[in-house]
Structure formats: C-alpha cells, structure tokens
Length: 195
Ligand SMILES: Cc1cc2nc3c(=O)[nH]c(=O)nc-3n(C[C@H](O)[C@H](O)[C@H](O)COP(=O)(O)O)c2cc1C
Image (cartoon, rainbow, N blue to C red; front, side, top):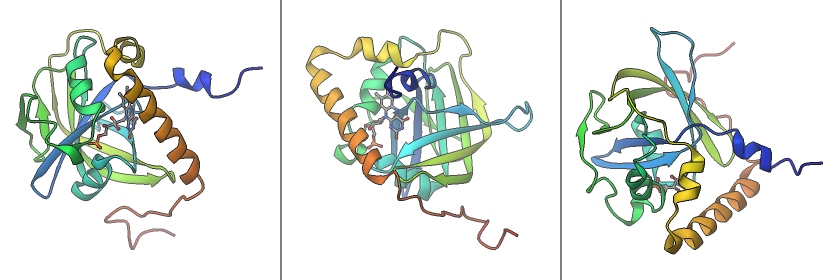
C-alpha cells in the first residue's frame, strides 16, 4: 500500500510566479498550487494557495490583487530569485525586469503567460489561504514549454539542496500544526452577505 503522501506530489500545477504590491512594496513567490478556476473564456479566473508563513501571504491578502505568471522551463533564474528566499530579507524583484500592471502589481517581462488578478474570494485552510483571482488583464509570449515541479527538483544547485530540503520540512511541519485552525474568513465585500 502506498503511503498516501507520495502520489500527491504529482497533483501539483505547473510553476507559477506570483507577484504583488502592498503599501508601496513589491514582492513575489513561486507556487505549484495554481489552477484554472473558471471554464469561461470571458471570465478568466485562477486560484493560488499561499502559505501563511510566506511574506507574500499577508501582502496579497492586503492588496487584494496579484499577477500570476506561467514560466517557461528555462526560467529557473526566476524560481531561484522568488522561491528560495523571503522578501522579508530584501527586494527579490530588484534583479528581475518587470513593469507595473493595470492593477498596480508587478508584471515580469518574458514569461509564457501572465494574468493580473483581482482577488474575488478566499478560503482559509488553516496553514494557507486559497485566493480566487479574476483576471483583469493578461499577456505574455504564449510560446514555450511550461515549467513543472520536476524541472525545479532536478535543477536545484547542490549548494542550495540542504536549504531546499529544510524549507520543505519546515513547511510540512507548519502545515501539520495549523491544519485544524481553519478560520471562517469572509472576503471583503461579502461581510453582509449570506443566507
Ligand atoms: C517549486 C516550488 C513550489 C512552491 N509552491 C508553493 C505554493 O504552492 N504555495 C506557497 O505558499 N509557497 C510555495 N513555495 C514556496 C515559496 O515560493 C517560498 O517559500 C518563497 O521563498 C516565499 O517568499 P516570500 O516569503 O517572499 O513570500 C514553492 C517553492 C518552490 C521552489
């Protein structure tokens, strides 16, 4: 019998860089938890799950907006810049060419596709928040192979491997500890709604 955890490693999305700007500061992180969240070609929506220990979490929550970028398989420099250290320790976007998008969030130059999203709902999972984004603007090169988690796992430089493993373990422990602490978060604008 399988241990239950390993097969779930296949249940991840392509690699997506998520950026945001809150209170005049910009930041970004890498996720493999992005999903298309609407079938409608007119109402493009996608979701990302962001852990609460990441600096980006409170920034996206506060800003109510993010840009999600699908990366090409050769863009490991972006994964290293955004996914292997925290914006608490410095400006991670300083070395990545970007412009300010329609919602005020950074848009990285050169990626497969990007979606500037307004957060339209959230769900608290205990350890993380599931952000549902409605795309207000989009673009990108449209060509190339999407980067997958295995591209990243195979390409971690040996000198970073120990840190990569330690970050994963810390994330797993945090998720176990917080799994039952689900809060009934109501997103802005829905406060007076409901049955
Ligand atoms: C391949 C890969 C996938 C990741 N997936 C997620 C994810 O789905 N959700 C998340 O919150 N963090 C994820 N992370 C971790 C964040 O990108 C990482 O902790 C980042 O340094 C957070 O930066 P911040 O503190 O500036 O927000 C992933 C990292 C990598 C390398």
